[in-house]
Image (tube, rainbow, N blue to C red; front, side):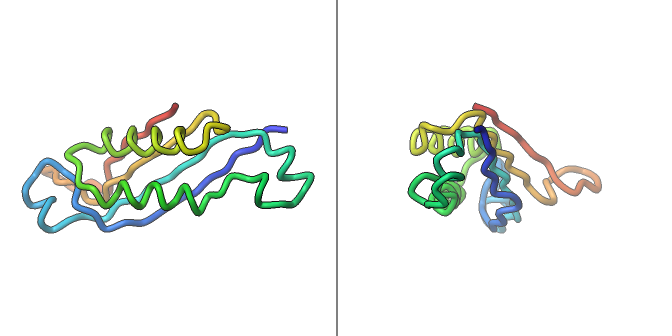
Length: 117
């Protein structure tokens, strides 16, 4: 039986971007994660040992958010790769990184990049 594990709206204050002001002042970011895996053993046993530990996934994402990058593409790809390495049972890993109030010449709520492995 296939299932999907998700973490949505993980909020971070971080210092990503190409502009010096972004590296000094920081910005607010949201990260969404999802992946598919065989949930049969977890569902039948009701035992965390057979489920994907999404707290560990959160820690991988939080650790990567703490390292400044120029591009959202780099962040999303690094996170997806780290998750894939730590949890080889996951398929269709999707990571979306959203930068609130991107530095553009006009009103924009956010910019985002999504990666799927």
